[in-house]
Length: 409
Image 1 (cartoon, rainbow, N blue to C red):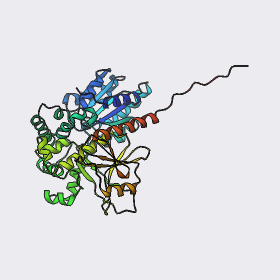
Image 2: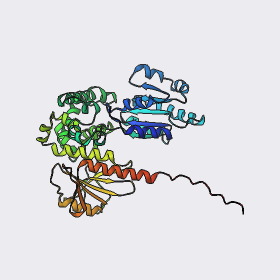
Image 3: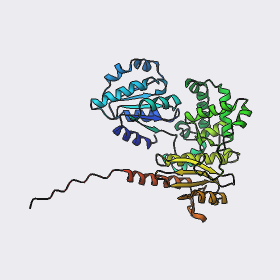
Image 4: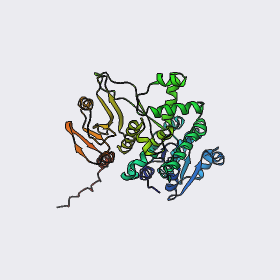
């Protein structure tokens, strides 16, 4: 079993908050993590996909009053949106009776209903955490090719062979389309949504062109945007916004779109082996998306991610605005030659970035012209982790010094 660093952050949050909402796509390991945490506490587990468990909460206060003081884990909580109002009252009641922390752990597959209801009802009472598929630090640098090819969903990454991994991902996609997405209330035909998802895989990392996609699908532009919203809500697609604060420049306004898990990108395109991937036209976009997901996962909480592209050709693949305002400009190349374009230098000067990094396919760290440092993805991730560690240290409150008493003279 791979130990997930998310466990510590969730447990720490339970020590300080009445509730924690753990979000993530299906099959990412939320239930496994929650049960692992519950094993070390006085806890009860309910799954809202089981009719018997849902019936238990038909009168939520009657049941939850009996569990006061215990950790209540509620899985797939988005299926019972009316529960959030009851949870608000439960948290307030427990606080008055001295149970201020570690009361509820809510797991959800990031539907818009979940986010909307919890934001309205539980504001100030819970903290939010995202569980992503496996990221590079959770595996090891030697497994990077497998992580890139198979993606980070545990069952896919840990499969015995490339074939077994691809079969799991194909089943995952089919189940999402035929069962899970309709369960969220979507009436989009499964075949239409699969075609759309596959189109995004072919255009991995491209600018969102709703007119082109709607023409190919035979639907309206509004429908295309609705499909994108749905996949973003389910944490399957990332909509990377353009940098927009420089009002004096003519900048690209459309977001870039990435399928967040590289393994799903490859499954949608029928790519089974690394050799097939390296010869496929999507290899560059796939590698870029893989790097972006790993670096965003390693960045400190509160980091804002975007890209920069001007009409004059100045471009940065990934701009990270870190807590405190530092700007990191990151160029991503699937090459062993550490070289960036002139447009990257121009864009970095325009934004006055603090760090300029080229992530490329080699292990050597090389200083380059214009203040750019070329390094491997693993080195870039570690650099962000160091920044996060320093940020956490600065944010920690210093211990209170005891008052010094002056002896009577």
